[in-house]
Image 1 (tube, rainbow, N blue to C red):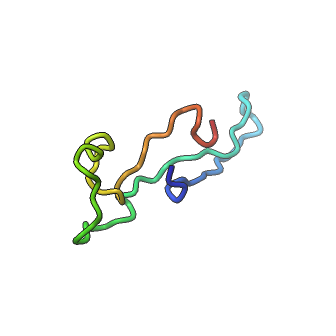
Image 2 (cartoon, helix red, strand yellow):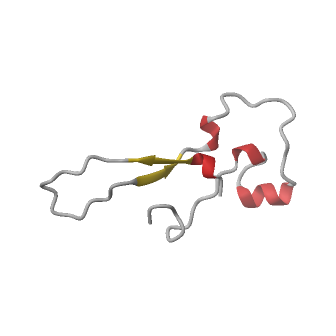
Length: 73
């Protein structure tokens, strides 16, 4: 998992909210937000691995976290 893609957010917790508050929420920023254009000669996955991962370029790979293993639950 690419920890540099994780961000945290601290939502407002109302004193009148009947539910237990979630004080920190986590989300993933996709790697394509960090690469404004495709540079030349980026490293590439082998074709069979690229099909499994859904992208040809390792710099643009972002795995979907499993729900039970994701930060914040």
